[in-house]
Structures are given as structure tokens and as C-alpha cells.
Length: 190
Image 1 (spheres, rainbow, N blue to C red):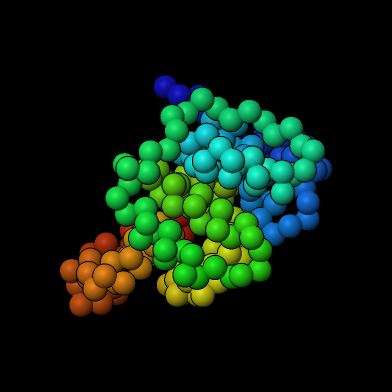
Image 2: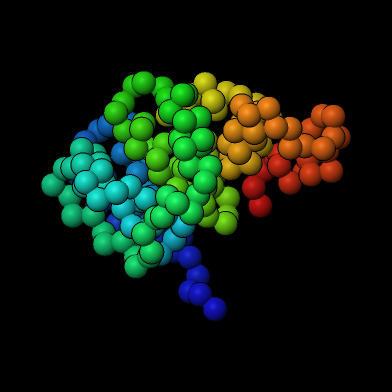
């Protein structure tokens, strides 16, 4: 049986230490949460938050200059070949970036990699709650986030958006309100 996941309270000291070096840029807080969660063995992100070496080093240098981030837990590297929808997901997110900070592209790449995880997207990212993910989506991809006006789970929402782009209708009912899976797709996380 795996050890219990660290709570936000337990992660707070590492988070505070990293944030002491934050550059004051958009996404500093959310990236710090992902980094310390990953170091504690939480989430589904591979080393470097799923970014390739130089991109992760550049992200750290930009958002947390002079910081010594916690060492990530031992995990296998990300294999983009194992995710055939990667390019579609990335294109969807990049088509909706806010355009306020250079980190939005890196955040999009991290979100795409986290979509390979088996839990809710906020958990796979190593965020501390669903509100963190909503803040990430609204801050980095506001036009896309605005389309999620029914509070659909984010991972399901992203995949549904890809299907709609391709003209694939995944819900067998004529409208989501009468779909048998409505309760699984909408509403609060448990």
C-alpha cells in the first residue's frame, strides 16, 4: 500500500522556500505547487514536469531564480509517442493562450503531459485542489476556460473540445442534460 499523500500543510514549507525566490510572474504560485508536489511523489508528472531538460531548466531560472528546487521523485520520463493525441491537445491549448506571459506555452505542455495520468487533472498536475486548476485554466487559457460554463471536469472537457474540433460527438444522448454520464462529467470533485 503506498504511503498517504502529503497534505498542503505538509507541502507548505517547501512551497514557501521555493516562493521566496519567485520572480513575481504569472504562474509562479501554480508552478511551485506542482514542483513541490512532484518532489513529494504526488501527481502524475514525469521529471521536469514533463518538459524536456533545457525547457525545464529555463522555466526554473525564469520563475525561481537562484532557488534550489526540491529534487523530483524518481519517475519515468515522458514518452510523447505514448500519447497520440498530444499534438491535438497542445494545439487546442495554444490556440487559446492569454498572451500575457511566455510561461503559457510551457504550462500548456505540462497540462498535456498531465492528461496521461489516471486521476483528475488537478491531481495529475500535483495541484492542491480543483480551484488551483480552474485558476490555471482561467489565467492561461481564458477563452477556452470560458467555454467550460457547465463545470465539466477539466480533462473530460479538454478531450471533448478535441472531439468537437474533429466533428466527433462522444455523448450518445442528444444533449448532455439527458446523458447517462451527466453526473460523472459535471459538478464538484469528490
